Image (cartoon, rainbow, N blue to C red; front, side):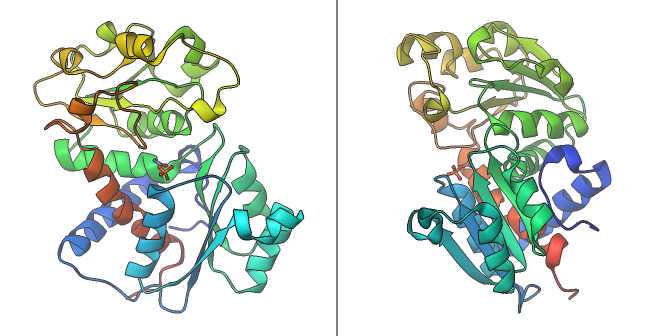
Length: 304
Ligand code: CP
């Protein structure tokens, strides 16, 4: 891969996506055999998270360690950001510390691009505002591909708070690129303007959208990004947009249920579905390490 940064699915070519997913498959096999590599020995990977994270931050750190890199974790709550240091100055400081890769999560869309334009280090977007979350989309695609083989002609239904979801954007772009038929489903209040640009069908009735679905991707209700009420209660939301056992009966026989996490049980997904046989939510988490190893390897890995 001949690029400095990975900022969004929209920037990636089909051949780059294929290379990332096939490398992630190899990494997944390596993890399952309990093997590690030294292909990032001498490299330093920093995580710079301005928003909370459990899965993304820890799996990037684990991925870097699995490849022999040194890691630095900049906790914004206890860093000089609290003294007013700008993102660009923080980036220049990390450059001066000879950081090879900066993994950034920020509430403002476009922050990873600003950082990438400023620093020598490679930058990976770990989620920026309501824009993109490329590593999540890649791990979702890896999980689906490992289940179905090819995604060509498979129906993916992305349901929930599409308006505030960077995962919805990245997933819609990537699953369409891989040949899946994507339907996004949300109440009118949670459907963003311009969604039709994403090469997907748009549906507001989940009972219609879910018919024949091979993949149901439930999105988290992003309460922290909602400045107003978008629905009257969690129970009402669950009644119309919840992924429930009853609704899953409308899917194809061999369907899977995905969720980027963290989940709101009883809201966008029922607990019994999240824990049920169709759920691949923890498989997604497992594949997250492999995908992030592939991203690091292809950006800055030494040849073995
Ligand atoms: N899916 C996801 O981004 O999870 P975290 O917020 O825990 O990183």
